[in-house]
Image (cartoon, rainbow, N blue to C red; front, side, top):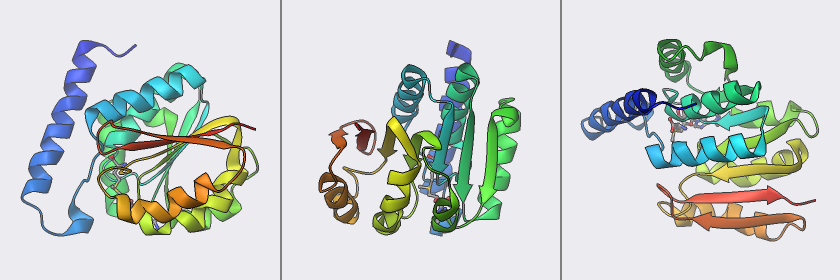
Length: 196
Ligand SMILES: C[S@@+](CC[C@H](N)C(=O)[O-])C[C@H]1O[C@@H](n2cnc3c(N)ncnc32)[C@H](O)[C@@H]1O
């Protein structure tokens, strides 16, 4: 259960990230966190789906990972979270420890495409995509393979960066068996259901 105190602590971490990003020019040093309502949305989706195998692409300092980890803990599952930058994952490890969620998350420092290329069939119940948007079309064949029947894929930034997201969205809409819709939550969430 997410207590008011826990929600307040998550909100404080997000506010701290916003303050940090406001004075940080270098993109690789920015947190670029999802919004708290997006975190709540992910938690609700993961809980109602009963997702046990959750994959996150783009860990940063672990703000979104915390929400997914809370759902994984409740579902007795786990999160595998990927980021290409080791320093980001060190920050995430520290935040997971602070929220005592380390046991529900495996942090993997890698290029997401390399990891996806080796991931097994039907190995994910929920995937959260929040990394380098122009690379998503190359991820799509692998994402289709790893999503279990009835699984969900959520992509952040559908409304904040429509031009960068358009090629991926076009690929998804052209693929039979997937139901996609964009919701005006945070920076815009494209939710894709593997409906086959
Ligand atoms: C927008 S941030 C993620 C924010 C995070 N989901 C949150 O809300 O707290 C994007 C992250 O994707 C990572 N990234 C970029 N390209 C990547 C790649 N090819 N493979 C894995 N991670 C990548 C970046 O290092 C960065 O930390």
